[in-house]
Image (cartoon, rainbow, N blue to C red; front, side):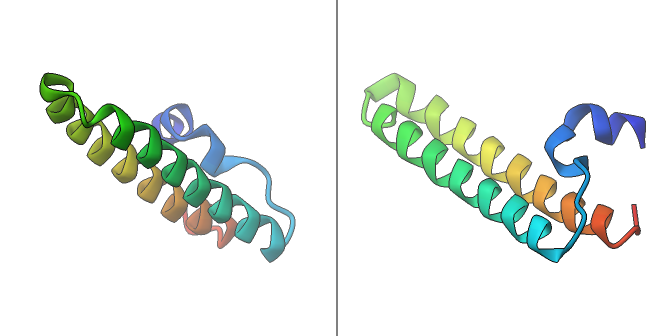
Length: 78
């Protein structure tokens, strides 16, 4: 559990009500959009495009796991 909190600190912030969970999830989605835009712009470069694509996949996976952990933390499952 400590390793989850170490690698996903934003998912385990204190959430008092469902509105806080929704705001947390929306912030994760916005962060994904911003990362996608930045990596998409960088992705047009020939060699860096492949690296940007892999980085985009890692960022999206990280944000998805963080959103799921955020909801599970609010429901007191994790």
